[in-house]
Length: 137
Image 1: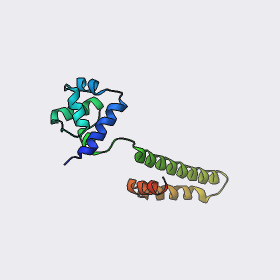
Image 2 (image 1 turned 180 degrees about the horizontal axis):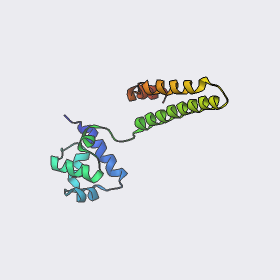
Image 3 (image 1 turned 90 degrees about the horizontal axis):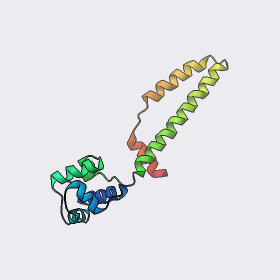
Image 4 (image 1 turned 120 degrees about the vertical axis):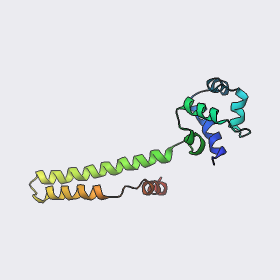
């Protein structure tokens, strides 16, 4: 079952972000302006063929159009920023260990190898990153 509220929000947002009037979108989809207005206000559900055409016009999948809120993907952006920051920190740690090795510490190479193995075995959970972002963002 699809969420008509999310569809309405996605349709309106996608139309506006693409700087289309209801009339312009109607021409692209092959329906009347009134149909677009009714879809955006939840008065009428679009036919499947019109959902497919809308998805093509906006270059999104039908399932995203129907069920995943597209507007303001700040949560996803925040998660990727956290991931980037985490990986940058890990690269800094590797660089530090590498500089120790070059300074003559015989153990450093083994430490780098162990660190990389530990890093590779860590469970990167996007859900955990999302939870962390939600707590601090």
